[in-house]
Amino acid sequence: MPQLWDDGLTLLAATSPADQLALIVGAGGLLSLVIGIAFVAIARITRRRRAAFAAGAATASAEVVDNQWRNIGYTSEVSLLAFPMLRYPCRTAPSSSS
Image 1 (cartoon, rainbow, N blue to C red):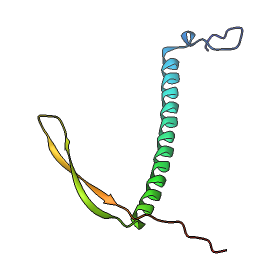
Image 2 (tube, rainbow, N blue to C red; image 1 turned 45 degrees about the vertical axis):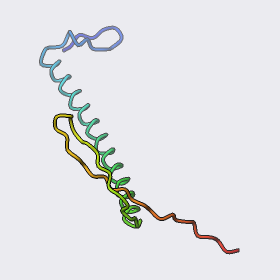
Image 3 (cartoon, helix red, strand yellow; image 1 turned 180 degrees about the horizontal axis):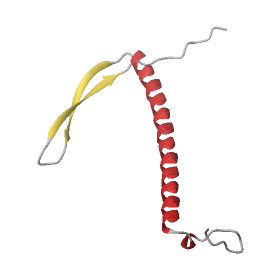
Image 4 (cartoon, rainbow, N blue to C red; image 1 turned 90 degrees about the vertical axis):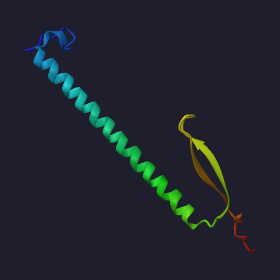
């Protein structure tokens, strides 16, 4: 039985090494669980936002007007990557007839 102090808190140094290891492993597992849940929540939010953006972009009509080439990589290993320049038509809000 671990030694208790006057305020009721357990002193970690008074416990056996096996109990200390169990506390550390338990705390690590709980921390891993919390971090995992946070990553899942962030992934769901990102997936929803990406789907909303893709749905809006799929309905937009655009015209490719030019390709711009950029150097990608280190100076010793340069490769070119093309970025299409797009022109979107302006959308106007529907006018309300009153």
